Every structure is written in structure tokens, then in C-alpha cells.
Length: 79
Image 1: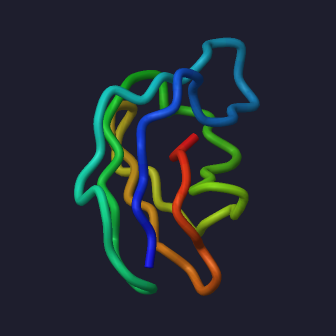
Image 2: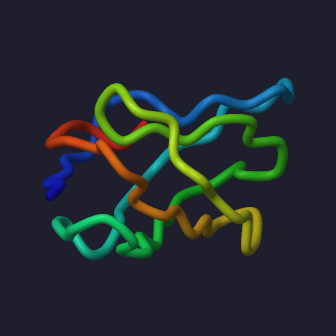
Image 3: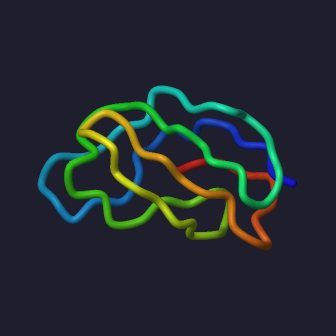
């Protein structure tokens, strides 16, 4: 089970422009839940984390990423 909050910093990127998260949905779920993350500058994202866990993700556009809650993810920030 995870419950997530928006953290004040962006997700990791290998580019020169810093990505920033503005919202995400749903805010809680179980393993296998797909989370839509919205923001800006998602072009070169290299890592998405929920709490302390890196999760699988798919960039949809420069403003959206879909992340999958993987086994072991606990309550925490999305960043």
C-alpha cells in the first residue's frame, strides 16, 4: 500500500532543465497501481521515486509520466 504526497523538488533528470511535479493521481493504491504524474520539463527524466523506492515509469509527454507502484513501495513522497 502506498500513500503519496507531493515533495517540493522535481524528479531526477539528466538534462539541464529541472523537471517539476505539479500534481499526481491517484494519491494512494497498492502494488500495480498506475500513477499519472503531471508537471513540466519531463523530457530527460532518469528516475522516479515513491518514498525510498525507484519505480518503473513511462514518459508520456513533456508534462506527463505514468509510474507503476512496484513491490515494496511504502508511504512517501513522489519525486
